[in-house]
Image (cartoon, rainbow, N blue to C red; front, side, top):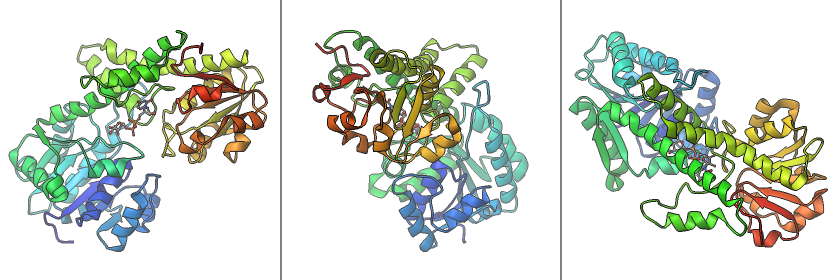
Length: 447
Ligand code: UGA
């Protein structure tokens, strides 16, 4: 491959890296996707997506067929491209602080690959990293491993991503902004030009700032969204105790105020996913190291943890003591359209139910294989939706899958042993569930 402005490489073929690589290739950029996991690389080479994400597999197939995307374990191929995105995972350590091992290794290998390169190369940190990482950790590693001047021979900038699982491709193609944090003008301009070519007339607003600010933007964004969810769940818990009150109407009304906005005001069983909890913990930990302890961020997390108990309380109100009760859990994924169960509220709720002696029958259209790894034999997995309800004492709807919306009162009544339904995702209109013992997050006792 000849290095030129239309060539990019991406190190780390997880969610973010795969979607980034697939998107660049789909817009005609010659793209190299790199990962240390040989099995994953083999799958991508065959045009198969190693994880479930709508639209991704189609894009990969077409990109591989057109030879616009090459997947490899060989980092030296980065030298044949003009820019490299670092998209490796930045997991949490046990104490919640960020573990930079993967990105340090990736930066070192990338640097070595660039040692002999004669022309300018831009390195873009897309992984979520705590403020200061690009300049204080990545920059010295690259300087040492490339033996080049960073900012002159090799450009370095930070460019966080804001994509959501389930709509990751759409989000990559239609972002609301691009944030570029750079120390030097050349790398900022190179990345800006790359995005101008990528988005053409649809280029979103670009916010140019320092690497540290760009790094903080990512945490601020996730912390704000998580706080919004914990906020509405707080209001839901209050609403639940007042006859005739419905949190959904509260959310609709306050969301009309442009200062508040309607999104991320859906009360539920608490947020899950690989990012909110991890990023909040990293931010809490990072600011504590700097001498600032955030009451707000800790409360966001605590409220979220507590929300699982609130769901179990709703179940107990309908069924009485849970010992030996057969409970159907519909939905295991942390949200619909994904097979991801990382930090899913369903896991917190199931663990609480098990502790109280309940027997669980769980169903999810996609996430059962992942859930099995985490829950093992402690729960029974139903082969389909209807057998999950069979002879159960209560059903809890934990994920907002469309197929659950289609269930009607008669389906529940026909299959279950007792007519108890807890709608933790507010899928159903309470008015239509009069024939059942119906409880829902944020819904006060019905008059
Ligand atoms: C989140 C952010 O939304 C992305 O912008 C960010 O890029 C991503 O993390 C990341 O850092 O990689 P994601 O984890 O895919 O994306 O999921 P979200 O759609 O944000 O949902 C997170 C959780 O909050 C889910 O469990 C969802 O059910 C819950 N949620 C969301 C609610 O309970 N209520 C809402 O109103 C919205």
